Length: 396
Ligand SMILES: [Zn+2]
Image (tube, rainbow, N blue to C red; front, side, top):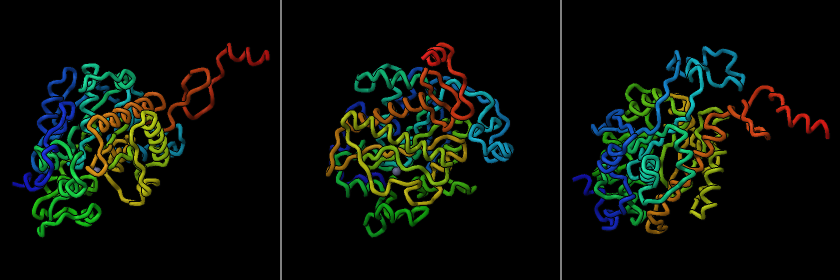
């Protein structure tokens, strides 16, 4: 059986995990369905026919709008689109602002990358029961999360996750074993290298497909987003985002833990800048807690030099959301992280992200914070100072 071929040779420890480590398909689905106040919806099916679920917490606010094409609405906005004060044509973004930001946590688009899903399951538990799944409180994170509508998609690529079940994690696997689960086996029994897999689209089945791909061999990060023949997962996710109109979408991946990744190449420069600012806030919070943080030399410019239109660019052009690629920490035997460390990093990322979203905003150019505590539009003339302060300053 295919699943057995991918997990062959993994240490027995990879098949066991503490109860707070929820990452399996049935396990996550059962868990979110059992959370009171969380609405669970099937938003589509994978190439292999597996359901893709979205679990939402927080009231849904409808937008009054006349267009479902951002491109068309920017067209209709005419010369106003050049004014930074009018970056959001209301025909697409809605005529009045919502009370709460909407944040999507999209997990597991690459089947072996599950740390973001584990952290998101713990965040949902915190929202519903007041503690993470270890019973620990995170009061600031909870307070910030309650100010938003939070939507979790546990498995964007359920085919990939299914292919290495019933294993629960790869924390204690060697790098070679992890690569085998992720990239699969060619006919000759060898595992292709990471970048090599990207030279084939779709990936030929070989002896067994890696968990990176859906059942049709598609790497959903690099789908042909503008093609009518795009993957059903891409269809399901993008249609859902157009309906929900989130302010930000976190696309969870894993590496050794570089966290907020470089900005996508084909989004407006204002959003690229915001990605960098949020990246700094998140990295600062993680280091303040003395948790591990990685930096790769390539991760310092938009698109990391790929110049390709990826799932992140597609998300922005579909729904206007700030697309944030987060590389949560995985672990390999050669650089072992504990379950607790991986979850702690995930929750620290969420907290910094939510604080930023609620206070400064996920949409660029919207708010400015004055020294008297007032919050005003970021562009346009400053409002007159509050009367008291004015008198005090003049008397001096
Ligand atoms: Zn990935």
